[in-house]
Length: 124
Image (cartoon, rainbow, N blue to C red; front, side, top):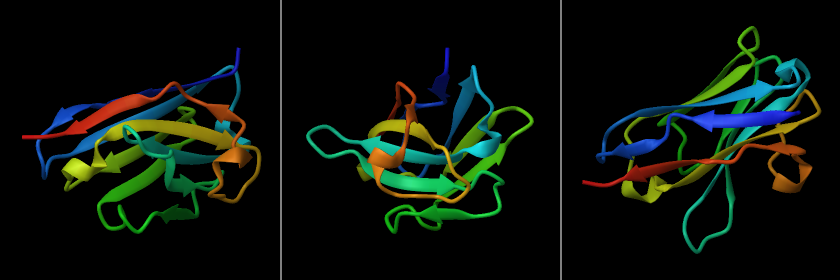
């Protein structure tokens, strides 16, 4: 069974950090660009970041640029999202997704595999 599983979410104070993981099972991530998305209550799911299949290229939404870092370890079949300087507006369910190509894309309809999401809450 092809699966993506996110982990690492939780409750953190403003200014704090979290590292999300996205682990694949049933397939290898080597040939997939991976994106992170988030969805806050009552809002559309929005693109946050993505990384190419080799890890050599990455992109970020303006709202997280300079605070979030995406990386991948293909040997561990896992992609990470390091989130620093967290703000209350970062509160959302975070999803990882895979697209069968080398380069990043933003539109969520391009992504074929999705994880179940992990909750991130930034609050004092």
